[in-house]
Image (cartoon, rainbow, N blue to C red):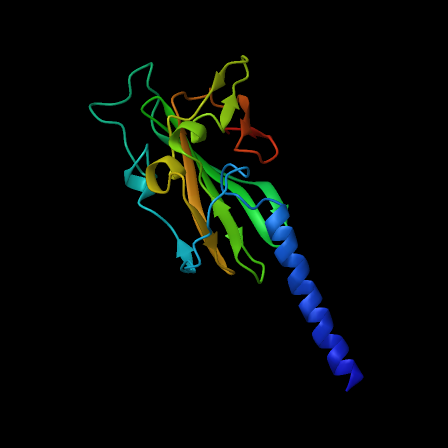
Length: 197
């Protein structure tokens, strides 16, 4: 009987630890200083949006006309699968990059593999556009012209339910040279060095 209660207490303690870690570490999709009520509605197995049709180039988009001009290279998708953040079953991954029409779209996946909901929020449009950036190899800093937050849920708070994910993205008005590296600062997550190969 004592062993059963000890096991139950261990499960409760583990769940409480995950809740605290989810609250303190990496809890916001965007600006972690934002506040507001969390939407208690659980998200579906994959909380995706119409990101492929809004805010920038999508997978499989093609150059128009007779072909790319010398200043507009052909559209291309770069699979990346680079971990940006991971703590207690909560991860943010830079899944891929797409280049087309002189723009760079970075696709990110927020995944909740913990047993508790992950409260996240999007800042206002004005704050969102200054919360992320890429720094090119020549030192230029480029801010996104649109993001998943600015087009779908500006200034909103919600939750990523256990076992689900959210597909996010940012579109930058520049295309880094193939093979060159750039630094991605995505909201207040740790900076990540990225190379398009």
